Amino acid sequence: MPENATTETAPPRDTDASTIAVDATPSLQSATSAGRLAGAAGIVTASVILSRFLGFLREWTVAHQVGSNATTDAYYAAFTLPDFLNYLLAGASLSVIFIPVFTKYLAADREDEGWRVFSTVVTFMTMLLIVAVGAGEIFAPQLINITTPGFHPAEKAQVIFYTRLMLPAQICFVLGSILQSVQYAKHQFLVPSLALVIYNSFIVIGGWTLARHVGMTGFAMGVLAGATLGFLLLQIYGARRAGARFRLRLNLGHPGFKLFLKLAVPIMLALSLTFTDNWIIRWFGSYLQAASITWLQYAKILMQVPLTSLGQAVGVVSFPILSRLYAEGKLAEFDSTLSAALKGMLAMVVPVSALLIAQSEPFVYLVFSHTRLRGPDFHATGLALALFALGMFAWAAQYLLSRGFFAIHNSWTPAVVGTAVTVASLPVYRYLVHHHGYWGLSLASSIGIAAFMLVLFVILNRVTKSTTVRSNIVFFFKIAFASAVAGYATYLVDQRLKIYIPWRSMTGAFVLLVIGNSVGLAITLVLAKLLRIQEVNAHLTRISRIVQRRLLGRRPAPQPAA
Image 1 (cartoon, rainbow, N blue to C red):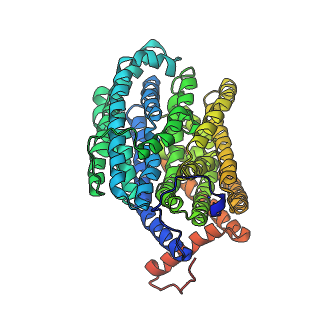
Image 2 (tube, one colour):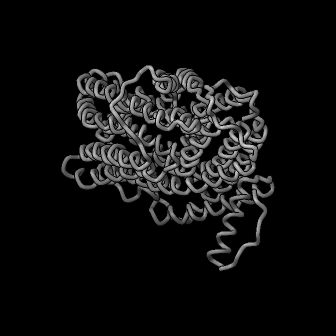
């Protein structure tokens, strides 16, 4: 998961005679956009938090039912080929790619034409998916030898079986992404947000009910069932509810379809680190000791729970608004909206990452204590988690920055930059895994994503000639300093308390985390006040008003509009 200036500095874009003129009352329009953003963010945030909790519960169920061993490594490695197919068809990005195409027609009051483009895209992608999935099923053994070459024959056979079972789910993911995009463009967020909730729920159900009988196959069956129900059938209902009109159509010469290809092809050809990081980790991990891939998977999902819960909702909700602002030529509001979203996201993610680094091992003990994991598993997962958490700010920022490029119809730049950074990062992965084993891969991941984010930030601000660059940089260093001090203080408190608290248990870890996080949060808030970090202070003001209204039964004093 995701900044701009005046009209004359905007990058070239398609023009249309019926494009909506720039609003003469920008303050009113800003308030309207902010209101839509806040209302939709509430829905998306709740669903993202729920889906990420279920995502964690999915991995917890694996740890509880099976633990960490060569079989779990094979299961996680089996996602590589389906993920690659999804990436090759831009499946994970289609909801982002199609929104600017569709909103262009909405902004020009040509919705019927937008649905014709939608029909062509769905028809074309369906045909492509049938061919691609069929080829993957046939050539799975040969492809597995490339994706995970370090496994022994028995483990490779398991990877092939799980891969073939889960490959058809990609049809649901890719088509579901397009169906989600038209709902986002019509500012309908509830049904699309439920896709991951249902998907993760069925994996948990499959693992919990079938793992004792068929092992990891129960989880793989849950993947297929969850994708079918959550990403395909439910999204068909949601798209029809949003007014979708579909007819079998293959007008490949339509300007809208050409724009779709213009945005999608760079994603299909590129090898961005945001997608390839997991593949690289599994490739190198197949040569390491058994359970290495599983430790890294557990650690990464623990890092992603707060990351996506705090950051993904902002990116999902802000992107269609940014796309429409650009389509309507409201570039000053585009700049301020993206900058505000970036600061708001980092104000939440950076402090959380600092506390997660300081308390990674107690956190792992808390969440995995009643599973089949043992002492070495806890230590390995905790170390990997701390190193993954170093890159949380970069994962959050690149999510928004990439969408900044997509909103201005520029998908080539993130694609080229992502591929270049991936290639440049490979020696870093190789060096660190050679010298430090599994945890070297988690450190290399954070270094690579930080480099990708930094390059995107520099280029996007140069392309758009943003007026918010300095304020964004100053804000980042302020929140990073406050979070680092708070994280170090939390670490010192934890080291002292570990002498007296039996923290290698659920209860002890919980007590340690409560005390440590309370200290860290208090220091962060004090430093935010001293450093005048407005975004954090705004959050505190809102919390104070809620407390006064709901707990004390008092009406807060009127505040000036922000």
